[in-house]
Amino acid sequence: MPFDVQWFIFALVSNGVMTRQELEEMFRNLGPAGDLGSFAQLVLEKLSQGLSQEDAEATLEQLQAIIDYSVEQGESGIPPEYPEELARTAAPAPAGDDEPLDDEPRDFSKKKRPAIAKGDGVRYPFPDIDLSQIKSFDDLPSLDDVMSMSDEEVAGLMILLLTSVQALQCSDLHLSAMSPPFVRRNLFLERFGSGPLSPEVVERLCTSLLTPDLKARFEEDMDLNYALEIGTCRYRVCLMVHKDGMEGSYRLVPDHICSLQELGFLPQDVPTIERMLDYNNGLILVTGPLGAGKTTTLASMVNIINEKRTDHVITVEDPIEILHTHKGCQVTQREIGLHTISYHSALKAALREDPDIIVIGELHDLETIENAITASETGHLVIGTLHTSDAAGTLNRVLDAFPPAQQAQIRTMVAGSLRGIVCQKLIPGANGKLTIAYEILTNSMSVGNLINEGKTYQLKSTMAISSKQGMCTLDQNLFAKYMADEITYDVARGLMRDAAVIGQIEREFAIREARKLQAQMKQK
Figure 1 (cartoon, rainbow, N blue to C red):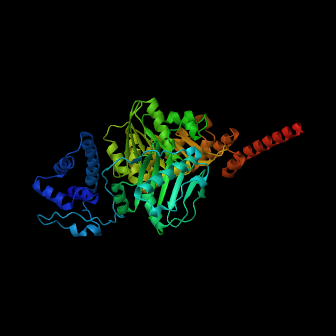
Figure 2: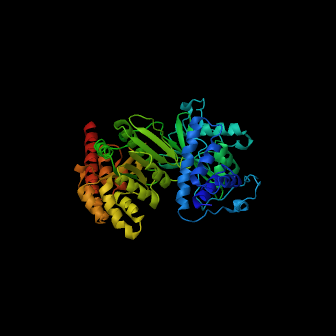
């Protein structure tokens, strides 16, 4: 049996689509001339029986992702290894043996998990409550009687809890076994409730909103990311298992696509970012630590493109958080685990889907980074994110992902294709809410030369003297936001490292304090 067919069967069996015995029997019936193409067509016909036209087309798209995965794995010349739980079906089944696989949890910790979409997120109606009455944590629903509630009551309690913490301007809700429930608000963690939650309570709460398919996936993998929709509010949910039991993290997604200025970009910097988005090809990177607001910045960029251009935009996300409607552009959004197997397989497939712009939620491995750089050189505008804290670190992260023998070539490719880098982090604003601090790098001739020569350590000084080209360092941005009264002196000064900019802000602070004192004396 060809290797690509073996991997195709493995992917379908692992996902519980069909049994291995059924699939192997179907392939044997094709005879000696059977190949992956004819086999996949036979499987598609079986899976599409009784489906609507729309569902059949979705099945075809999802099956194509598994075909791409199987061809890629088959090229290695190594057959798939079935986990121990499936060992009893590892050998070809005897004729007539069509016993289905058991439902015991399976360990896929060492395997990529193939995926066929069973849905597009989880949706619930908005509860009929007055959120204006939620003023403090004391107004949140009690979690003390969870174990005596029905499944429907627990699901209703979770919906009420999520919408209530949203009303308190929280960005995250965490439910963790053997810990009190807590939220993140303005970057700080705050606990509420009467005490630690038992493992049983957390499990009931976190699984109450799952569909049967999502629950089965969580039992297999012990990790799950999915999108939850309550009315018009969306949440990015991450479930996991730790030493004390389950934990659920619920990230609130903004209910509208914010403009760059709403996110905290200064008016003088917005045109620089918009110019990056005018290119027909090249690479734009949005970077920052976890929880830095990269997703919302990425969504704002896609919205700008959607309003200004008439192109085909393909996004790959894990999961889809912010939904885009078709304006000037055709926006195709794909989710890891539902619509595609991985970032790099989706990016590879996207190059055959006639895109103009490709948005990658995370550039986290060598193959994805390499494909992104290649795509940016072959006529596509590629926008991606990385978990780095400054422009120089971003470029080092990209280059260090490649073997030393390949780095000189990659430096040349990046020097030519890079359009810009936006590095950001969330900080407390002067109004009590959060804002972003950031630095911007654009690819000028001097920047390109530094990248090509491997002198990324000189980028910060180049950015500091290139304000006319739209660049700024983090310290310069902090000073500008302080001057615009968007952040306080203590916040700005605490994050600054550049002695020259520190001197500027200290002088400005002294002048402002002297003016305040002078005004007080006049009042007396």
